[in-house]
Image: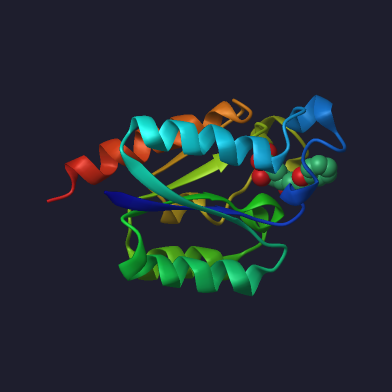
Length: 147
Ligand code: CA2
């Protein structure tokens, strides 16, 4: 059974408590449960994590090499600032999907650019928590396509 890391960045631990009009009403725990259900259906094992620290995300991306077959990452605000995340993703060269609950391109101008997008296979944004489920389908397709 393949293991997929699902990594979540800063402030996503606050989901469900504030800004429901942007991020929905589900908590991160609810999203984890949704992902676990989908993973069971796809015969995948998931390792679902959240941190508020950029360096911890870098460590976890590096850890994924050897421990996981693919990565789903919601880098949250680090999407728009982090060359370190870009470099880590390039270095591990695993199938990787960037996920956003909202549609950053339709929001403030500073959210229009992602440093992560050019280091992943694809981006899913604007579908709320369902984006993580779509991400698991996408990563399954990517893994199957790898020699
Ligand atoms: O839409 C997404 O998933 C984002 O990655 C969320 C980030 C934002 O910086 C990105 O541009 C898009 C923000 C996550 C903060 O989540 C909160 C949840 C509840 C209350 C406050 C913040």
